[in-house]
Figure 1 (tube, rainbow, N blue to C red):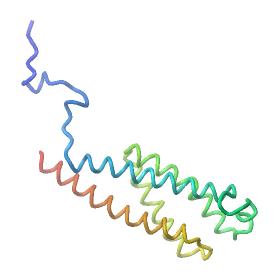
Figure 2 (cartoon, one colour; figure 1 turned 120 degrees about the vertical axis):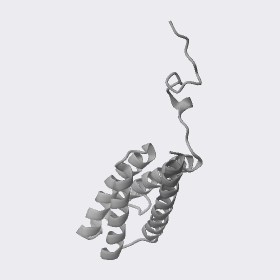
Figure 3 (cartoon, helix red, strand yellow; figure 1 turned 60 degrees about the horizontal axis):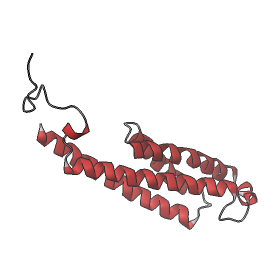
Figure 4 (cartoon, helix red, strand yellow; figure 1 turned 180 degrees about the vertical axis):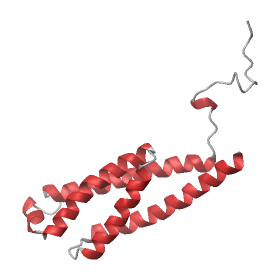
Length: 147
């Protein structure tokens, strides 16, 4: 019968306390939480326009052109899915976020009926995607240097 040696890597504890997380990896997780929260907020604003909150009535949504209605429904769904996925740090979450951001830019260019809030949220989203790429790169460099 052998005693466990905590200094031996084979006998080291396995769990959250034994995992080393670098500064940029911690920042990446925090950034993902903020970005996920932003995407959920953005999705909720689309749902609010579907149900007539802020515009006065549902009839405002019904009076929009068909392409604007389709875009609103699309972003009401994809923004929430991407937001939750980014918040949880899933591997496909960032890709969904990039697809949602690219689609939002295209919708803003193609759909003429834009609100000031929609344009503002899109600008913030583009800046957040750029920030995410930077923080993700720094976390990758940090983990590569540790090996």
